[in-house]
Image (cartoon, rainbow, N blue to C red; front, side, top):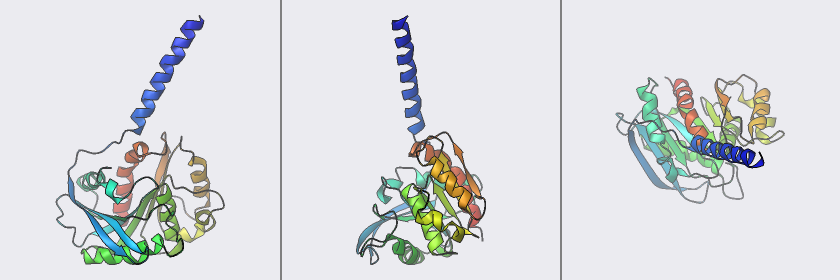
Length: 252
């Protein structure tokens, strides 16, 4: 009996491991990516040259005149990784499903949680410099939204609080928030800014995100909670919903 029981546990463990691996796989649509670029631009706010990723949905040329969704990355990914995450394909897929077209633009903010550290200020880069770079590329910066995950989700919410009205909407995947932090304390400043919140139920941040939701002055305009952990396997399943939300907020 002991041997049989051990065998059952082993099989269950293997099955659980395989299921977890499957949950961590990215789910990327089959749609083609449009124009994607990785630029290298000098940032006075950060005191260095930074990588800047841009993506336009397929069929929309260089994106001239399209509104912008700014990307704030988390701790483990950078603009050079965005194409590999399928962001350009997700963007085309959203438009093909009926969403109004927009462009994606994201710069390297390092691991500073999108807050200033000495003379390095990634938040100022996003607020001051990214829109200026977008205008030079021909994008419409009168209509902008912000999307981020993990540390970037925290940064996106913090940015919207620091500059009310800067973004038409904020989409945050598993934002790295905690009770009593700057984002939670200033949550009332998000009044009037539609917020989308997504988080996996197996994410260690799940209860912190639910606590933040209770502090929001208005109910989240989009988002949800489903089985998933703190990885792009889960987040990739949320991108279509988030892009629909962003596109709706960026309508003329």
